[in-house]
Image (cartoon, rainbow, N blue to C red; front, side):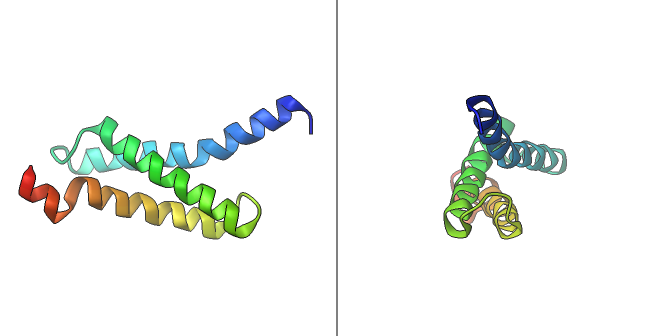
Length: 93
């Protein structure tokens, strides 16, 4: 694999969790408009999705495993709950 193919491989590997974070945050903002800012939700969701993707890569040994994509979805849901709907958020906000 040459250098350009390697770059595109890494870009595509990072695009899946970041793209899912943008889609997830957009749908959440359509359903719950007053919870949290869209950019903040995207940032936290992308961070957690990238962490799940990297962990899946380390545990399975290759990218694109279905268990990793499932972990990304769970990470997005848990992050949304923590950032926007957690009881501590309601008490301070």
